[in-house]
Length: 245
Image (cartoon, rainbow, N blue to C red; front, side, top):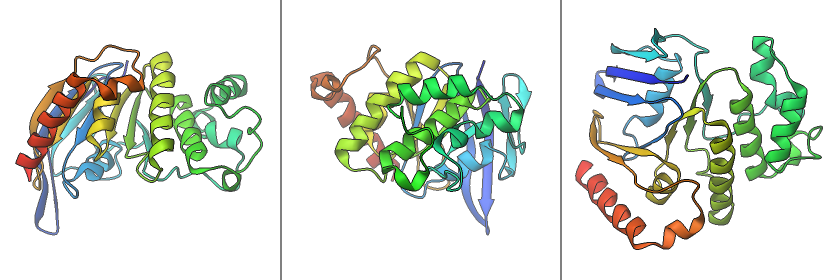
């Protein structure tokens, strides 16, 4: 499972409305990306889904169970990898399953191998590159018992080459596991390359102004970036974003 339904989500901070009547669905095994202007409330939305904040109005339903204001129902990876510096790579990736009492070290080692991190199981975060730390954070999310993952601009701090490498790796790993993902980015190309569907937010108070179902077949490779169809979609979404400002 892993279907999330958000209905009429509203949130106000200090008298300023951030989100206004936001409604959307992420289906089981779907990769959905949210695009929007800076400061449009994308990270706030993730904090609401994760139960770190309570909405003023609206509900979140995950697999037919209300999770509004409830922590621990989803797996959340913020912009920085947020690894525990005193734990090894292996100990970091089993953290979520350790809390739930379902640790499988063999599976964790297998997933680290798929992530190109074989031999780094006993290394510490400070010994890894930025891209490697992000891989560890995503493997941790995949190994957590939750069926729904929120990824908040996980590649924004990486250089362009590493970012593309990480996008390709993310798709490969995700296609094997097919957990439901809600992804936030400012990068239109990244959204097009990764997603099944894109939701475009307006500026504050944020509402969904456009929704795009993408036609690109899976599995995908970087040649997609060079196709006329990809460039046409990029132009259309760019215009939608400009119109949302």
